[in-house]
Length: 484
Image (cartoon, rainbow, N blue to C red; front, side, top):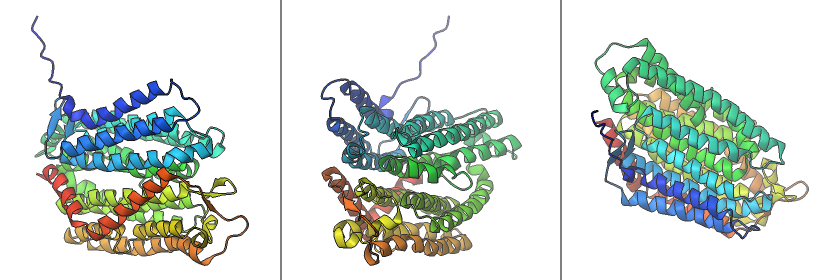
């Protein structure tokens, strides 16, 4: 019998994700040991694992590693997203420490699930094969489904978890069917082999349908219209720290896989998916901004805001090239700092011993807690795109790439949408500085870890706005090899 050669195993390609998974395993073991009355030490272990993964990503920068027959790729592109995702996860752990204790929902499995979700996001960024994309998406999604229902005694939390699970399973079936059709049309699931099979061939209807189904699956994960219906309920019902992870890390991971699929696997049919994404970007940013105006719940407003920001990022994909894709990476970095900080402020605000989630709850906050109000105001101004904050520079790069790519009208529509978005963001600032509270005022829940997270986020928002060039250059350098 002939010997079957086993493929070489290059675990170095999985190093950042393995460190995260190792920390999750240690957490599960430590959760069985005393002390049982507090879980702060588990949060410290989770944070240590994330920091180690971040350091590993920085250490591997510039060294490309391929493993498992090119199914997993640890290149600068994946490492850039690993850094963004590790930052988002670290922010969530810091925000969760005191927030969960106040809510009476402190548990060891929470931190383990956060790490499992983080590992799934990082594997999405490293995926070089559709099978790995599916497995990583499921690892991330299943963890987030459970985290969304962490507040077991709250009906809204259970509803959020169930809706997220049912719609997520539905979207995963579309994604899996799309993978099957792409495999049927090309005979491969590896991105490079798909690209080789598609190049120079007439258009295959099976491939077109398969690609369309893949976009449906990804559309759900990034919450683009019309696959966004889960977002408002999940953002509102899930614990705010979990909402921050869904809004930042999961979007970064899903966009990482989507960009690699479109740019590496199917560049030969770019004209088809560009036209589709053009329309999707317009509808997504417009609906997200218009519906956000009518929201009185701050978390629902931020949910529709996140939908609109997905539309802005799709503008960069339509623009294409190193400028367009690099602008998306930079925008995701800026958006992660800004959105994590915004939700971080919400975790620190209470009214009548309940979480302050209505816009009216923030009336008069500037008089009682001026520093907290100023911090939230800066995050909201960054989301609008006011200079010299990170949001302005991110939009400048995105819309500039669209203009250079010949999509002038798309850039004009995006700018008009940004003007519309200013209304509902500024409304919160008006409440903080120009309105008096009705009834019991909102109070600040002291938290050293939460304050540290807000300080880091604020520093990132200002730094990316004032000195954007080095980070933008890194983003373009990370995405450039994909476009060869």
